[in-house]
Length: 192
Image (cartoon, rainbow, N blue to C red; front, top):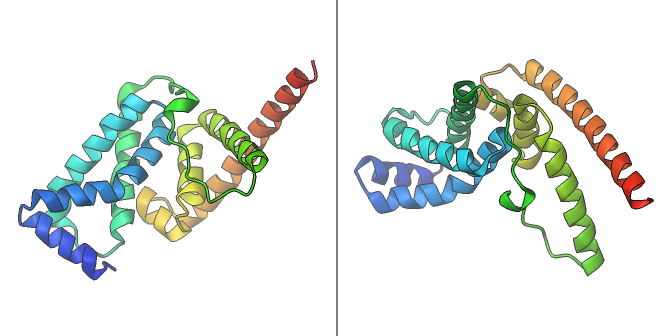
């Protein structure tokens, strides 16, 4: 399942090429960080977990057989590292400020009004995602924002596809409920 480029990169890393590992980290750092910050809610913890993930990846790269996509394998390590951090801390999630969350890059926008509307929707979704449980935010992030298939999510989370379908369904309902409450609150506040 590995591309020739990935095989070549892994081979260089296994031989001790630090530049190749640096390129590898550059390729996957945003994906790992995005998942980490959404699951942990704290920029500092997400940065720490992201570093831990790449240390784990480096140490276990020699054991990677290539029977799954490289990105899926990295997501599994990141997902499990986030769960481990949550269990270790055993504290409430810390909600990060919106300006600390990396914004999703948007395609070209025709008008400034479109840009403002998209930014407002994004802000609302980000705020609502932070109000969800770690598990709900994790599955929604993997499925919608990272565009992972259910099979890839199964490999990442070690949960059966049917369980993931149920969790996605329930997480969507919870997110919709939170979004509706926040939207109604904003409407009431803006109307005085």
